[in-house]
Image (cartoon, rainbow, N blue to C red; front, side):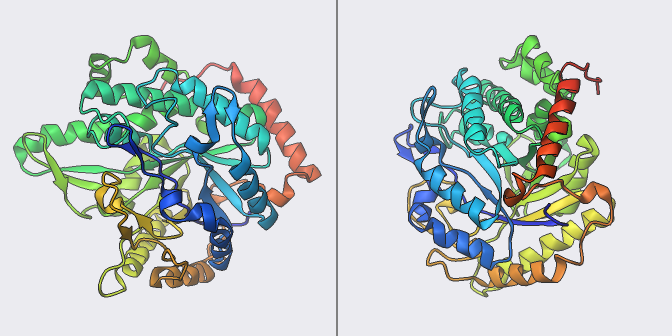
Length: 434
């Protein structure tokens, strides 16, 4: 089994559409991963990393109901297994195939669950999943900020997208567990905070600080705050839909992934308008808020910073985020891993993927020529320094990850059988109210 603390990276796989659905912002294509995927996997191993956030491109793989093109996934996942790299499989990253349309489509949850189940059947040795990446951000950017996909700017559009995304995530978890009963799900979600600019802004800031929890509240079956219940009911969620989320009992299969960037904190004005505040509280303080709410093991699942003119900006941010991880851990939060995202530079994230400029963003461990950046050197050394120092001193920090090479071992088969028996025993058990 994978020992100790998880050091990870990811290969950026966002696929939202813009311009009314006419342009697909495919980061695999922009970053040349379709051509250089073998080199990229080499770089993961060169970094000393065993865990990779990675998934097949949904729009190229899911061709229609019960129609799949697994050709790229078959090649890449066979190679990951050969290398004994653990994949945290990212099945939906900010976009859907053209034939589904967008996140307003009520058929999306059922369709996506079928896709997730089909993936698990084809790659049963995969154990870790992020079925849908950043559900809150996906709904916000697609249906309230008007940036991606359906490009709506309404509360009703946001609630519709959110309920479909969370329902799809839950249904996908169930479909995967039917195949891999010891599967673990890492909900990579943006950890946000909203600061009131003045006393008149306290109300809008408090509403946004309640709204930021909606995706995880619904996903984990936690009752939402009273003002958020009214907000959901006023904007298209039915009582039956809400209560169906409360019946979800999959929390014990989950690790809470908290993403944090310097843009995750916001300054709110009295009229509800917002602008970035920069880092004020930081990862440790905000993650503690999320942990106190959900009481789940935590993983820092995304961060990065653009390398600036001095060449050390990203390195300093890495050190700051790592210090925050150690602070969270020392404060007693069961944090299991850390991720610099992503492996290579990204493209057009300086405009939040809203403009197809082809502008390279120097945020990777490697540049797009696959040359290591200073932050890559620093992360590689950090891993060497801490990997054996941080073995778990508490059982809650040990994630029971089965390495791909161990999937067919007898003890691994027994674990899956035991997990299957436990799942059958708890499937119909009543869920305690929170």
